Length: 140
Image (spheres, rainbow, N blue to C red):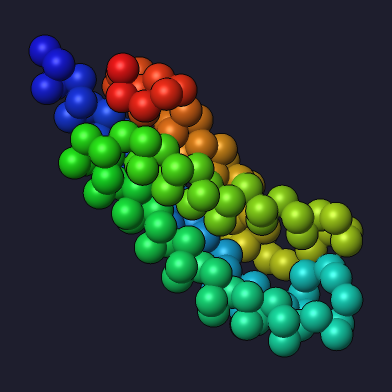
């Protein structure tokens, strides 16, 4: 029974991560290519592009490590990696700080799918990993 529950959690995590990676790959690529369509200071276009090239692959790798650590039963490490990776999607809402992006509806939708999957990954990190017997002091 326990093994079946862990398999379901692993499948759920895999699904959420895949959706998040697909959504952020589409959004971050569009943001890189059409940075001028997103609100914000023009003098930060180069900085934005460099940040995308560095941050997206790094955070995605951290997310994959979170999955791997969870699969291995290394729940505390998984929790940290998944929480860090969730930033990839949640931070997308920052586009609205400067206004409303003038982008096609498909790419506009990725702003929300990024955020939804980011919050879902964060929720998974808190719920599933905690439910796996982890306490504040470590494995309990």
